Image (cartoon, rainbow, N blue to C red; front, side, top):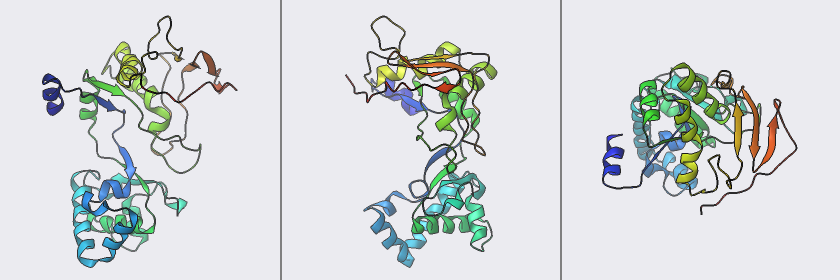
Length: 267
């Protein structure tokens, strides 16, 4: 945060985007392998893992990352969201995978499990290693925008990060209504006008004559996220309607047949 503030004082055009969860999500390889070990694509990664000396170096780095960064010091904090080659692994932690492979759930064995997962084809992971205090501190920052950073999952399939379903409702329910970390007005701006402006979508993000009508109608007293890490496939509640490009696409708790969405380009 200090580096960002100092850069902005110097005139650097830098902003922040954030989602309201204390866990991140990316590939196991991307999170738990050192950068040098990922160079050259999958073929080179597998080649390095077959070299005993390089494999040992990669494992040492993975141990460090599990202990000090993405794993928060506990193999249970790294949970598999999706493995295309074995769907039964979704929801299991590195500690679970280590046990499945006949090992004690130590950090060293969790790192070995991570290497094995990458060898088999790789997996998407969820990493519980973010401080709630930091989350709120970042959310308050005037340069912070809110976004999900999530994919569009197939409902009921695998074990995705709940951010794909609950990001915006969670901000409104937890960090506006319950904790009062930011005001409702600040939250709406961080979700709409601010990111639209930052991305060069100059005809969106504000309720103003001549602007595109992208509108979410919700009850501030009832809106809430329902998706959790254990049960991520759950739609948010408290939204009465959603309008995209002037057409109602969600009303009365259900999608309509309208499909007015389009690819947007910076202007």
